[in-house]
Amino acid sequence: MSWVKIYATYHRFSGSWAFLGHRLSGLALTGYLFLHIWTLKGLQEKVDPNIPLEQHPWTEYVRPYASGVWLVLEWVLFSAVLFHALNGVRIALVDMVAHSSRYQKQLFWGSVVLGTVLFVGMGWLILRHAMAGA
Image (cartoon, rainbow, N blue to C red; front, side, top):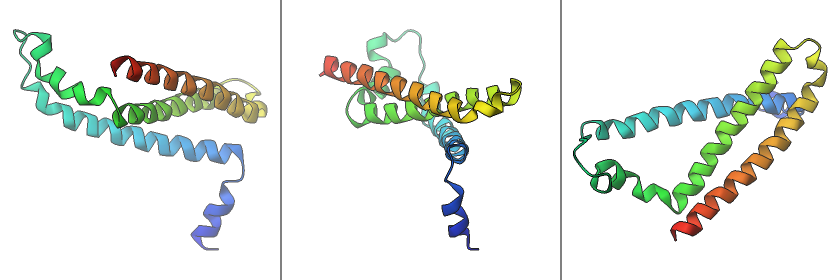
């Protein structure tokens, strides 16, 4: 069998989707962490406690990120963190609680429902913030 057929037939169950999503969100968050540290390292030398907050280089640096596309990307970042965290809790419950593996599908769908509610709630908060800043 080719890898395409294996890949296409592998993702038919909720556990398979959870496994794939957990790995991809973990890789995305690791990449984001390295990118975040790399972009912020330049501000480290510019820290001066005598500069007022309004004129601080950090304030000028983050000002563009408080609107537009950056808020949508912040929401995407939240969704990756949310999925990874909720799925991690589900995995921990299945691994540590006796007989909970029988309920892993229900735990998966419960985490999807909770994640959707939190995702929509965060979207509302971001939208409210964007409207207040406009």
